[in-house]
Image (cartoon, rainbow, N blue to C red; front, side, top):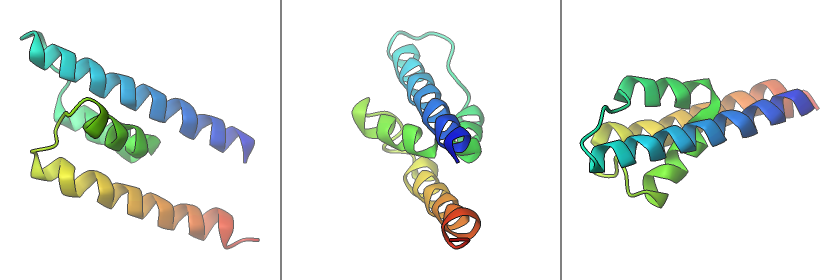
Length: 89
């Protein structure tokens, strides 16, 4: 469980930073991070980091795919954590 917690912490920090980098790139007309990459980061565990960065950096907050998609991913991940970790005990 400790390894899982460490992974979740690190992937969320990475997702938050990548989203922040994308926001900076959008402001300065530099090469952007594809939305697909941000969603992949969310799916592999960085959904909370992406969600936090949406409001911290005010990034992707007008994109319906992010407004609905990221919270949906979070809910699915919470359900999976409950099924595989919490329900066992």
